[in-house]
Image 1 (cartoon, one colour):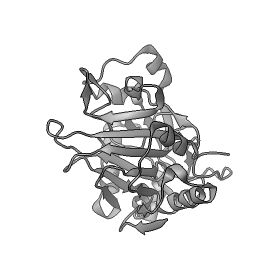
Image 2 (image 1 turned 135 degrees about the vertical axis):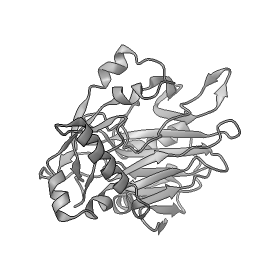
Image 3 (image 1 turned 60 degrees about the horizontal axis):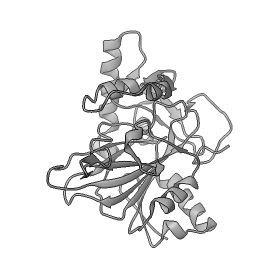
Length: 291
């Protein structure tokens, strides 16, 4: 296993086949994920079954709310794609745009996201990552302290309403996604890091008495978090398996020419713990949210 760190956050991994990792190899990969937060494992060749088996080693898989984009026969795999077959989209062509953490609107949001690229455009379609803990540590001590008691509303139904191209939510989808409130400053359960657990106004709302003040404060924080010095851009190639820790990273998709190029990516999400606030000293758990 060759691990090459990126300049800001994350690392590239070569020389392994995740479908055949033994226990020691998986433990080494899991330790690397804790250390680097983001791993891009190159040159993989996975089936749906081997992809799901790999993801399950991190913990239980949470199914995405939009069940219309589950892979046929494999609901654990959420398909991101602009490909249309027999008049039907095989996946969601407009998934992941806007700075966010995955499934943040669940009471137990995603710990680890895993993406596997089958087809990628030759230009565009990158994924940008921002280190929310590094950004938090760069604030003044006084500013950090002022943020530690604040909470944030996370709402999938707000997010869905902001995407008019999606069909209406079913009653079952609405029932799965009540609003939740998480601490703004989130403590990682396995390592001594605190970071801002935030996103854009489409689905995440900082809780202050005055909404206009809250939105302005949130936009200032988000602009701070996504500065180049806290950011890494992953440029995809077919066969990439990319996994990251949603407790300390935010990410966003970037545009590509959907009319000229095909994109086909599988995604699975590993359930995490209820987010720990800055003052919560609960017992530590491992990277996948297991007790």
